[in-house]
Amino acid sequence: MANAIETVNIRNPGMAWDIVANIHFPPGFDKTKQYPAIISAHPIGSCKEQTSGNVYGAALAKEGFVVIAFDASYQGASGGEPRLIEDPGQRVEDFRQVTDYLVTLPYVDANHIGVLGVCGGGGYSISAAKSERRIKAVVSITGVNFGRMSREGFGGYDPIGTLEAIALQRTIEARGSKSRVDDVLPPSVDAAKQAGVTDIDVLEATDYYKTSRGQAAHGLTSFLFSRRAAALDWDAFHLAEMLLTQPLLVVIGDRPGGFGAYRDGQEIYGRAASKAKELLVLPDTSHYELYDQPEATAKALEKVVPFFKTHLAV
Image 1 (cartoon, rainbow, N blue to C red):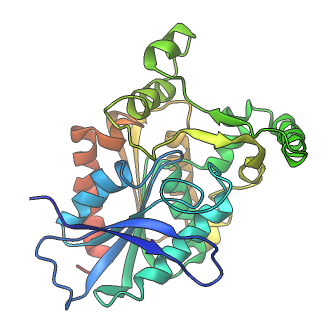
Image 2 (image 1 turned 180 degrees about the vertical axis):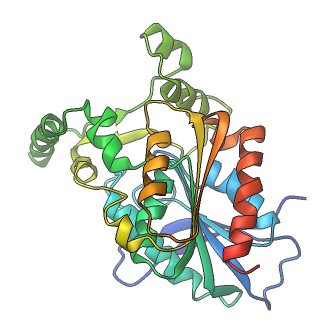
């Protein structure tokens, strides 16, 4: 039997919009008891109904956790205008807002809150934990530092040129012209191959997001170009040697692609100040297999579940 799920709207003081989230409840949930909670963060261009919720959120709920999978501000069912903004500062602030909500729930043990993020959500989870001390344990699943990615592959390895183009586009839009929205993926795997794409991450991302395999109504892979500047000026791992002290588990596959999760995982494992930290490198596993493929996700969860049970005192 599937776990019970409740959709909630989170509005905190100082916010002009709601964050919309799905709460996944454990079997036999009893609202008079207290449970450890996990915040589950979706990838860049994804939504709460995809891997963060329907794979990792559902699996962790079955293990006794209350799991809240939320849509980022400006994306999915959450509010914020204009749409399709990927702002790292706001993405990190969303974690604080969701944590504020969790600590008001009588069935959540406010002293035992963890966070899990997939892809860009992994990088954001790490960044949030550096300054949000209510987060007690961190799991990054094939996590990506979106700042590094924006300066490199998403910025044509020309960050200054990209920033100049963004500045020009923002001026054009401020003067009343139509917004520029970029889809960062090809329309299909066949189209990608015909265009000469060979990178495993691009091909597998297209297979996940553009087919019934992972497609979801709010799982868009498009971004407002004029609002991308903040990402180029950001680093998920800044001061990790000083501030990231919570227990940390980094899960990556050993088949690296252009999005850089393998190198980012190795880097943050080495840099984190955490005394309790683990790096799980799954053999013959790619970035997108860790989104939803049963063998890869099962191997990840074999490590993730006991990690959270140890550090969140289940």
